[in-house]
Length: 272
Length: 255
Ligand code: SF4
Ligand code: SF4
Ligand code: FES
Ligand code: FES
Image 1 (cartoon, rainbow over the protein chains, first blue to last red):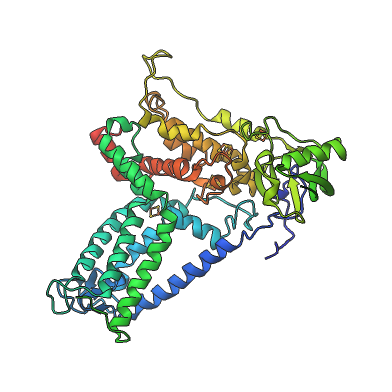
Image 2 (image 1 turned 90 degrees about the horizontal axis):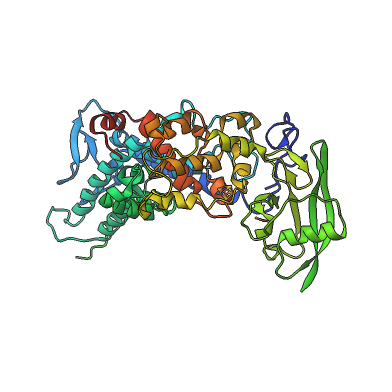
């Protein structure tokens, strides 16, 4: 991908007084690869999850529930034996129950420090890559509305903890057979377990979590337990990017699996 | 094991200049700075280049090699193919003085704007005692060699000259983090809230955590993950999180 030279008033790297180099950047490596992959994968996920969230069908195949539809808070949810379906919203809620709850995981990921980096670079080209000039005439970062709202990330983290608990419960229910008897395990159980493991790892590796458990302290030596927790979360946090992608794929795969079983395309292989 | 390498080196000053082509001998084990020195010795005697240690510790030889901000003395020639043209330019975020030398005084001005360490009352120098757990975080930041490659790469000022008055840059926001995490810094007792002023005075909000500072840091300091994001969280405690604000008032915690 060649750099596009556009006539623009001298600004940025073309500010008078800086080294006069016409090119917007001189990088020769494939710097455009990472932002392109980001855009492709995130777009694919958004398209898939939008379709599934509005579909309002094939989200429960006893004993498995799709992570997009749990907790299911509308009265028209398909009955889930022992599952998290609570008729908080009455029959007046005419559309997909997924739309009630998805705002929370969506907000968590939208305000996540890692995803912010990914979409600022990939979708907004601010900057497209390091030392590659961005196309914007003005830039104020996260200093004003709406982007200053990214600072609410910690509240989404608290909700994310609650969701992780609910999805753990869903995964545990995967050990019951469709009739509700314990002592069952199918491929779906494994899929839900893998999904919830990745969700926990992603959630606990969050930068806000790292701050809350101990990062905000000035004196670790006076809080040995929180220091231990901070050290542990810091270790996870170093992999936050990988966990962000892995858990994104995990959620989509878990939903797809439930969809395939619920729609009858596939029968859940049973181990015992 | 020598070959003739192709180089494009920026020559000029604040009035103007251009990339000039050179053919220079390259020997096994050399770094870009070696080649620049050979170029200076054999073909371009008046080529201006700043350097000191040739060991990646003085932070003088910062430049951009094939468009990437790097230390010339730490960029091995072996990372380039023999037939590849290697382009060397001065840092592109700062005013150029001549050839590869830029005026980095922006960084010194920013350094002076950061309030320095506030000595703890009642402790004479020499009486300071600190636990290793408490200084571990700041120690990482003290590896900084002040090469200013992070400042050069940060798009907030590289691409927006107009932001320079409002933005301290990653190196100095990290300095704020270092002091805010310092176990003996007594700024808070004197009424200086480092987390709040990081946002209000030094422009932390301009940073959109896209991590280019971390990518180019020759000391591999995790500037974004360990300094900037923790500072953003501390700022959120002060400015954007009513619950934490209330809790701090009621319980007087976090000491
Ligand atoms: S992470 Fe922030 S400070 Fe570092 S280069 Fe990016 S915008 Fe600048
Ligand atoms: S933080 Fe790293 S890149 Fe920035 S000035 Fe220090 S050593 Fe250089
Ligand atoms: S979830 Fe990514 S930083 Fe919190
Ligand atoms: S010459 Fe000292 S860092 Fe390169």
